[in-house]
Structure formats: structure tokens, C-alpha cells
Length: 199
Ligand code: HEC
Image 1 (tube, rainbow, N blue to C red):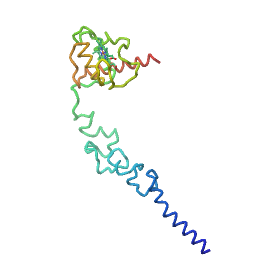
Image 2: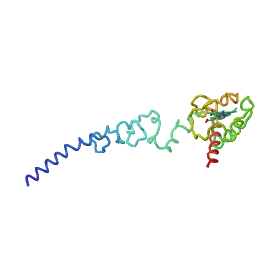
Image 3: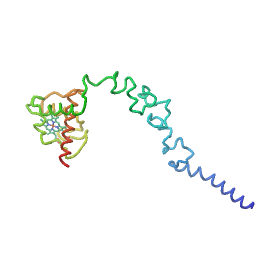
Image 4: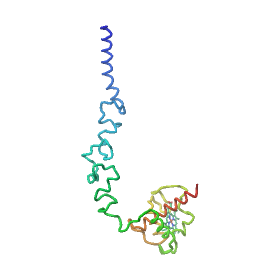
């Protein structure tokens, strides 16, 4: 009996000694002693910087923008209640008049893509880009990407303004203008049409 007890005690001792060593050696072991610094632990210290991590400390938001937010900064519905939040009265709009929806923007864009007086060359965007020509849509690339004619990597807005300046011999659109958004919206609608037709 004594011997059995002694053996059991030795085994228990070995188990207690070996467990933390094994757990400590594997950083992803949830039983690891160093849980607070374990990179695999969702509640690890590092992640407390993220205000959307449910484990983060709500009283110390690391994100300066979250200072203005109500109790739950991750709830999109809570945005309405806060003055100064994006898209709410009291915030600074990017332009005087907003579009109500995408279709409205795309429709204005369509008129503009067809307009021969948009620049001074007498051409419209669709003089060169009708039937989805020269838009490299078959490559299915998102912007920004490299465009050979420009010799640079450009965003869609930059590409529109490049074509305004060069083939169209017109003026580039202002960064936050409705016109530039409308041009980009029609590009998207035109691209969707292309994708739809390819199916
Ligand atoms: C004289 C012909 C011409 C006119 C007019 C023209 N473009 Fe272009 N456009 C081109 C050419 C050529 C390319 C580049 C093709 C290349 O390098 O692969 C291009 C490229 C583009 C691209 C990028 C294609 C890609 O690779 O993703 C967009 C977007 C674009 N044009 C929009 C417009 C818009 C908007 C207008 C009117 C404001 C316009 N273009 C007017 C000839 C024209």
C-alpha cells in the first residue's frame, strides 16, 4: 500500500513538474501559464488596443476616435446618437450637396461620359471607350493598378483625371466634386454591365 502511494505521489509530482514546461514551450497551448502574453490568446495584452475586441478594456480606449463614441464603439447603430460622427448632422460634409443613392450618381456620370463638350478635344469618353473598349476590363483589375498609357499606378479618380487632361484636353475634376464621383460611379456601372454580359 505504501509503495502504491509513493509511486502515485512520484507520478503526480512528475506530472505537476512537467505540465507547465510543456505548456510554456508551445505558445499556442491554451493552458500556457503565460496567458496574458500568449499571442494565440484573443485576450492577450496587445489586442487590448483594439476597441472592437470584446476582451479589450472599455474604460481605456486606445483609439483616439473612440473617445467621442458612446459606450459601445462597435455598434453601428450607436453612431446615430453621437454628434460629430460620420454621416450625421453636425459633421463636416465633403461637399455641399450629397447624392441620394448610387443610381443618381451613375446617371449623371453616364451623361458626362457621353458629353463631347466635357473637354476641349471634341471627343467624349465614349468616343474611345464605347463597347467597353480600351478599359482593360478583361483583366478584372481593381484600382489602383498600373496603366500603360499613364506609365504609373493610378487610382480610378486619377485615371479619370488623366483622361480628362490628356485625350479630352479638359480640366481635371476637383477631388471631392460630385462630378468626379459621378464619373467613377458610371465607370463602375459600365464595368458591371461588362461583367454581366460576359456571363
Ligand atoms: C482619345 C481616346 C480616349 C478618350 C477620349 C478617353 N480615353 Fe480613357 N483611355 C484611353 C486609353 C488609350 C487608355 C489606356 C489603355 C491602356 O494603357 O491600357 C485609357 C484608359 C482609361 C481608363 C483605365 C483603363 C484601365 O486600364 O483600367 C479609364 C478608367 C479611362 N480611360 C476613363 C476615361 C474617361 C472617364 C474619359 C473621359 C473623361 C476617357 N477615358 C477618355 C483613351 C481615351
